[in-house]
Length: 185
Length: 185
DNA sequence: GAACAGTGTTCATTATGACGAACATACGGC
DNA sequence: GCCGTATGTTCGTCATAATGAACACTGTTC
Image (cartoon, rainbow over all chains, first blue to last red; front, side, top):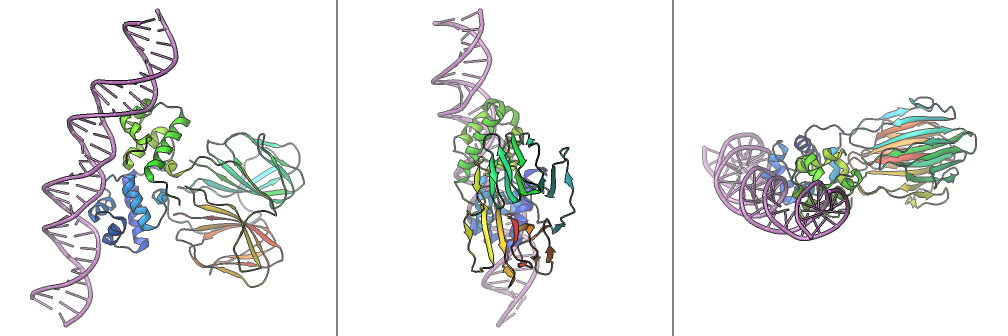
């Protein structure tokens, strides 16, 4: 995660969110139960607020607390079925396309995965806290963390911790699935 | 987002992360350039740290700043194709299943959507900053924000801002897709 | 068991963030 | 022009977060 100094990050975030909400500085101050001088200082970059203060601001603005670390919404992206950058795989029987790389401020990747029957693909543990969401789209597969694999049929959804060793094994030809890999950070 | 009082949230987060890193309280204090008494107080729930303090802790622990709002990794969840809580829809031609409700600290929902041809389903704008990721699984559909709809075929992926009016229209029977709705907060 | 190296805790002092009144503007009546 | 009401700013005061030394506790070593 990029670190442009916490206070400036906060300053920008508050300015941005307040502008978006259309509230005036005084109005927000009252809504949050803070002194407007406090807000003024924070928005101008000098200041090192406490979480209680930030919490009050976030709730008054009606935004989740994590708005501090987020980045303006990206624009649209379209990846056609035959496009997309394949994710490296020595396994010919496994082909994943990274559809939505993790943007700054978020911790998740979205993949389109194709799997052919054969040797199960074994994935090493991802960083601690990583979770995978698998939705089987076609075919049949045995997926999950070692010891808790499940047989999935089309439409089945399975979520499991991916910070431990886990497997993907196609049980039918042309098995396809959508995977959301979520990192807690 | 559920609000279990900011300070307790922080307290739990610091305790959890420090335990995970294996650092002692004194060691972390030194690494972060803080007094260990400060950490002790924070971990015990009393205290209202400033972001600079939190920042120092986060970087010393080597975790992204957003670790504060995250929740311990959940366990596995399995939703079979015929299970899952359908999301309310007056539209008979539209059926969505919420597979992975947004856990505290995150801002995304994962849906399995089934769509039948007929009147396009028009969705009102979601909260500002919301983004939708659609991966078409079967059939054919016209999807996207008003004015930027795209015809999707199986395998196609489309991401677009959902904080504006947008449509889902099936162009073939039994159209299915996976949608990740992401709120920036 | 005395000396030591760890753990995390408590408690005065001090640095500083939050407050609120006073301030500088800007705009709109009348 | 002179008010009334917005905007966001600055500054002295007070509450409080952060400090560091002293503390209680555990386990090891000799």
